[in-house]
Image (cartoon, rainbow, N blue to C red; front, side, top):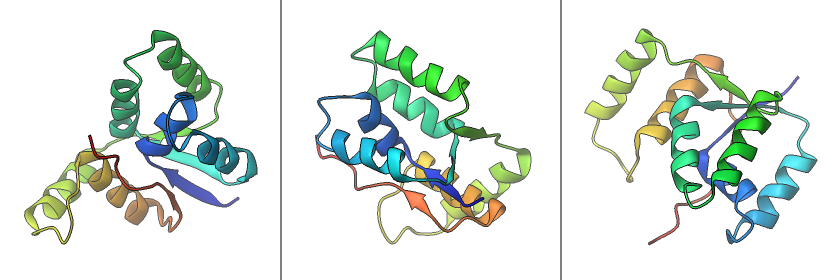
Length: 121
């Protein structure tokens, strides 16, 4: 089965009906047959973005609990890889979730990432 990493942006959009990418996220999730994988860091970011609605947070956690997305564990080896990535000067701004997905992509040999650019606040 094909696997794809999913970032916190699309996860947030999926559970926030007012998000500008909500429709896009719903379509992507409905149309993909890939196993979706994310990191605990992306789960944390998504929950923080959904803090405006406890129900949205619960819906998101229920979705995970039902197996819609696999949350890959972070290992000590991953922390070493995060350190190595963080040491390098970035060619564009990245955050911990982006770095963690980079580590997962390498570790799990996944080349498909469901994401979009960050919203400016």
